[in-house]
Length: 458
Image (cartoon, rainbow, N blue to C red; front, side):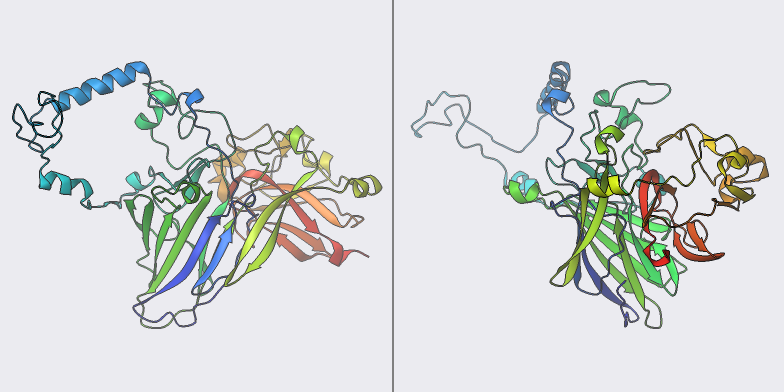
């Protein structure tokens, strides 16, 4: 994390540009990236074609819709408007044209009307969360899929995985009105920044030993201003002297298709200190490498997602990649299963539980909108079976596996859940002491985690 050693009272400091894109490969696995004033960081994003195409029917109106819209337009044209004329019967006389032609060469458009076409309009702003949670402004390059900027600065939608569907997100309307996406389901039932496709990401401000996410959860006062292609989010917290302004956009340059179709989302962050003294802050950015996440397990095989840091002048790029596991190594050193969750009780699986968080044994079945599960059961600390004891998310407890020898260098497992270091974590114990801890990434999808056990082998 970079530090602003002198973010003085009343002054603004620009953290720089964080580009969630790059076009060189998939996005990285939640890797915090260092930055300081004026630094530029680039995080790559998957390049995919948009799912909207003429063959899907979502890009063009039907014949019936076209005729209906044409009728509405004709009715509007019949209303008298003083933006052209008046004309004479022989308006084209002397111009080398048919003097009786019904369309005059000189339209005599009023100067005021012409000026109104290029006049800068007043931008629209929203502060009410009931409106902010429904905002989705496209911030992906032309033809590269759909990524939306939400009302509090988060990115959502993530329709970049070539999933066949209609509309911005799958939607069947409301209980009273059941219609399809192409017929307006997302209009009568707008999504609340929710999508079947999720990519873990975020901006986190570190201030005086505390973490504050640069969104509605960290800054309760939010104002969104839309001036396409730029969305500006102002974030304030009455309890903090630090405020933030986040400008998000994708390159959108008239007559420049090549640069306007880059799979890039740019975020520019400005911090301001309204306090009486200087503050030392850090800014963390993370973006998951989401490659192959939504691919069938049969197609993934032994592929693994990896990330590597590439230094650049004035910053760094985190490159997400997909690599195949070495075949020879897999044959020479086969995996050793340690423990699973496929039995009905913890006693049968060898796990030992304490407290209420995991009480009752493994959870069988699947959870809505959770992707990547393997097997028929899993361990879940939000124990809804004990809802009578209070909020399941507030239950505490531990689940300890059988002891094992580090006979292989790497330990792998699937993890899903919130990011809460020290309180919500998978821990490696050696002689009863924690030697490594890993928390979630605020994602609703299982991701493969790989821990290097080399420091504790031997």
